[in-house]
Amino acid sequence: MAKERIKKPFYKRWWFWAIAVILVIAIATGGGEDDTDLANDAGDAAPPETVEGTDVAEGEKKEETKTYKIGDAVKVGDVVFTVHGKSTANNVGGEYGQNASGTYLILDVTVKNEGKEAIMTDSSFFKLLQGDTEYNADDSATLYANEAGKGFFLEEINPNLENRGKVVFDVADPKAAYKLQVQSGFWGTETQTIDLQ
Image (cartoon, rainbow, N blue to C red; front, top):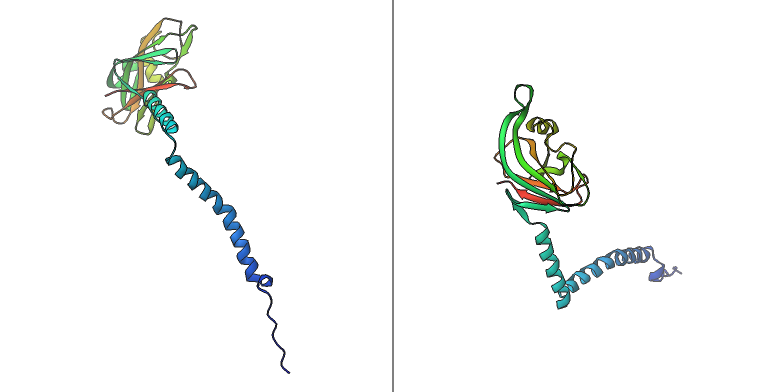
């Protein structure tokens, strides 16, 4: 008499448990993504109050990123910056001065302290921007470009007083579209941008 083959119930087979584990993992990881997508879809159909709040926030962002031009008084915190003009040179300080690796872009700038305490200025208050490229001021060239006792190298400005001097950047292309980023202190917690075109 031939032995009759007994079938195991499906829940006792290895492939059933492999599929069950895969499904549990898929639900655990995939469920979060579905919830996020649903939340994003719900965000698109937000009530009018939320949309109004978003519009105000966008308006504020536009105001924060306003770009100024040469001649504008630009207030950053308690400090007001004014770029009066720009020039170029291959050398600053003459025979005993310094030569540029590329070309010096020299900015004539006034820094006014409208705060209640003295501030210490430095060339690190200035960054030259060209797209996503950032240039630091050339400290040595900045010293040579200014008369003795002038400029922005660790100069103290008392309240309601201003300091006018030159900030020098060594650049490859002096005709490129540059912007000057100015900041309120050494840490650059507040910044504004001045278009140099």
